[in-house]
Amino acid sequence: MTKNATASDPIADSGIVIVDKPEGWTSHDVVGKLRRIFRTKKVGHSGTLDPMATGVLVLGIGRGTRFLPHVHADTKSYAATIRLGSSTLTDDREGETLFAASAADVTGEQIGAQVAKLTGEIMQVPASVSAVKIDGVRAHERIRRGESVDIPARPVTVSRFDVLDIRRDSDPNRPGECIDIDVEVDCSAGTFIRSLARDLGDALGTGGHLVALRRTAAGTFTLDDAVTIDQLSAQAEQWDSAHPEAAEQRRPPMERAASLLPMSLDDACLRCFSSREVSADAAADLAQGKWLAPARMKGTYAAVGPDGKVPALLTESGKRAKTVFVVRPATL
Image 1 (tube, rainbow, N blue to C red):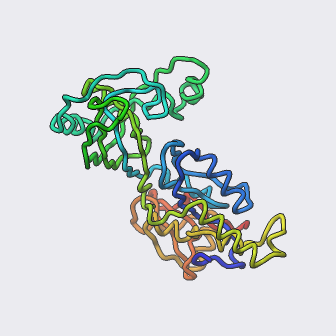
Image 2: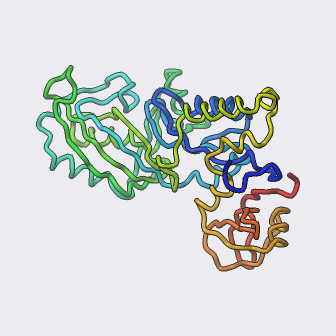
């Protein structure tokens, strides 16, 4: 059972799960699976991963779904492989080839120079098959309808774009014509690694696309925090075997979800934000959405009561420290 998760806690069945998403699964597939594992419809994710990608997918369970919007803007980290030698409709290996040219003469110095130009604050055009909305409709839906898509460039920040390895003769179907580049990228939310691959290939005149992608971190959450779908399923089966009567209930007791949660909502709040200790009376006020006197703290932070639990996330403006998310509403 996670820290502070007891039967007397009204949000004992709420928290955060960091899943190491398997290849071939959509983010929605993972949500559906966790709904069945936790036996609740209240499951959501923060930051979609393409089916081809693996790695860190942050999900909220129960009231944890209300917590996700407060961490969605965090930076992301990726390990990826970019192939020079062709471009595709989807900017990754799953799309049909649009253009091909030999990358045999491309040097490491040329690759490094163009990577440098794609580092820092840049303007980036998202992939045409992305979830970006154009006039209220997602780009990939318009592509499926056969419509042309013109997505405007938008500012993103690539704080790190490191080349780890350059491998030639990477495509057995085109001997000597393709180059695979293993990279690591730290970037702002909303940055498309597929678009970096496309733009790198375009700049070098060879075309480029993504052949592998693994998210290694989302904000403060890393692969070290992640569990697999199989691990969660096994834990659920173990709990159900040990509690056969409760396992048959349509709405199993809170203890079941609490035992499966790797991270309580309290722990998630304290992991993502700085904290401020408050009195029991102040914690009760925050549970009702009331404000406190400011403590000269910047940004969003977590209030922590004497019991170690988080009643709310706060932000300060003028003479007030106001709630931006009430973790434990008095109405629960």
